[in-house]
Length: 131
Image 1 (cartoon, rainbow, N blue to C red):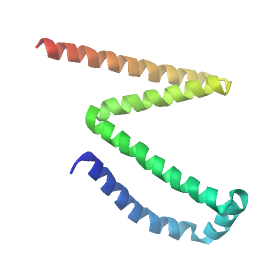
Image 2: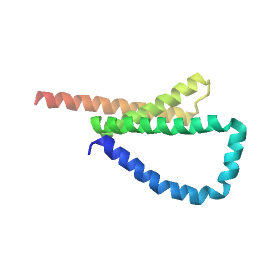
Image 3: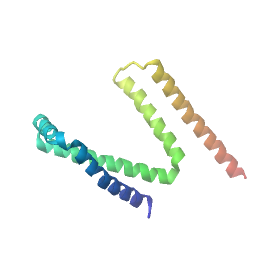
Image 4: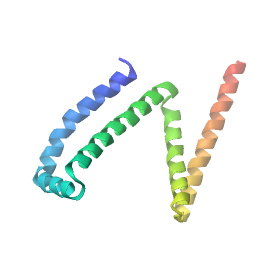
């Protein structure tokens, strides 16, 4: 099986395991919460948003799984960390939100770690080519 099939099987099994748990734990409040949401947003937009959210989440994870199978788990993890830092910094700039000292330090560490990893990887690739 290729990575797409493995990912699809994992999702199906997760769905089959999770749905009974959700029904068991959320059943007492499910009807009231559903009616509140329908009253606030309407049934059609609510169902559309739920379906689109599920679809785009699946597609995002499908691409992430395929990407990881192509570049390796460490590279994928480092890039995912860098993506999160970039989102935090760009969001702070766009929404004109101040960054606390801990956010700045954490972002700097993540950016420096990503940079050092990419430098180490490129140096390792150069040594491999020479050999």
